Image 1 (tube, rainbow, N blue to C red):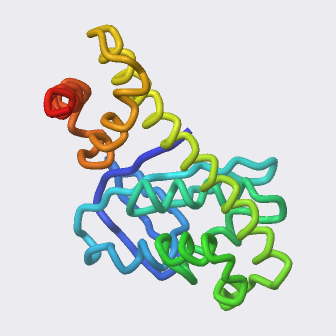
Image 2: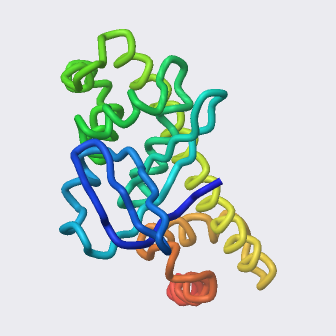
Length: 195
């Protein structure tokens, strides 16, 4: 399976590109968003590729970013949406705008995409919303694990759970999770010392 291409851009149209890699030209269908990010012909190009294999054909779909490819993969997992229609969706609306429309259940905005009727728009909104909610729950669960680790560490130092819960919550809100466990623990200890 081809997942990535890097080479010279031989030809580009709003629907497809041909990339030369070591004397072999690979043709990939692309959304308009990728087309506008491509350079001129003969320039270097990198594409994230989805390989679609059927009984009749082998087709490549190219994207300028991983986010576009991920959204494409989520779209083709929706019942009734194949690769061509998913490309159409990405050509008709940007990933951020689609995410916003899905969050707000803006069916009208999604139906403005050529080839998308009301039923398909509702299916897209419903299924992508469920996937976005699962992703948010996973992120929250990761944060709650960090919270429990901090509470456990403070309790091991002799503090009672009721004393430390508010301090841990305030510290996590103040600092991002990128701050790291040790920094968060130090901040919690500073706050506990003031109490």
